[in-house]
Length: 380
Ligand code: GLA
Image (cartoon, rainbow, N blue to C red; front, side, top):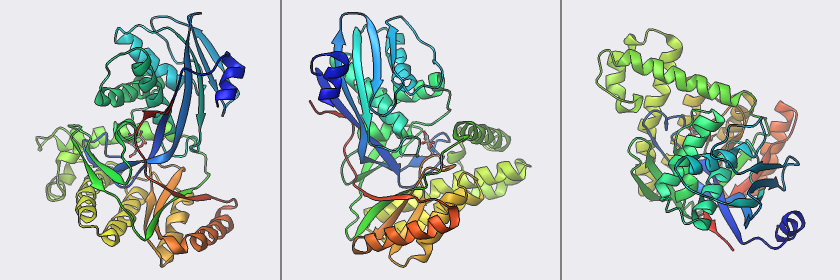
């Protein structure tokens, strides 16, 4: 990366930063409903090599995409087409809106996360950029503010109504820990996530997440409508303020079967996160795994964000004796699933699931064992 940087911008980079991606262990599609989620950072992520320049240009280049940009420094920016550089540009725009002054920059990015596969490649590139500028220009942005700033760029600049989970996870991640995050208050605690005899498998369906953004925004809107209906009798701010008993008593207020299913997923998923946290504290991975399967079922039947590819993966996992839990992770509509698989069966699992999936879907998934990791940092 240093050689590439020199070839493109001249000189070696002043700094190199790294920000991980994340998997969400459980608590899906509830971080925009005031729920509790349980992500952890992984060891794959985005590297950023960067130096200041005097020519007042923000130069964006990537080892992963041919597209480049060189933009004059100005007070504010708008999204330019669909290019990858909108993600770092979006957070730079936020930094400038907050009244900060920066100089021109030569920025080279490289990522080893599969792009758009539900492992938060976008949060990773956003947060690495915020972290870099914070360090290089002494901006005093706190960790929580970094996460919030990334979310704001994603919501307002990119135009996806996503929650805080991804940005928070990639800032705050810790090796061998899951983060139990209250998406409403941003209170959080670290839970032990030591998988012992089990490997945390990531199975990339290799299904492009087409329409994911628009479907995501559709689910966001549906939750808003369900909440509005329930608020006629319940004094709550978020869907996740409602417990299952109270939901059962009031679900008739929604009067729309689709919205009712959406709410049912959200409220039951929030409950499952509580149970999953207890299971981790008790080092009970078997119970944890069952909750993963239950979460997937709810995302499939009630929230309808899974799809044939992810369902095929989870269906195989259920039939494989040494896999104790599996579910889609992230926004869904393609992307990745995660599974807990006995370590000494991993090779066998990997080849059998590949064969099964290929037969049913017509192309292969990518299967790898993942390590948990730490949050964003400087590496040079
Ligand atoms: C995406 C969003 C997150 C979260 C998940 C679903 O990753 O960025 O905020 O909503 O989907 O849980």
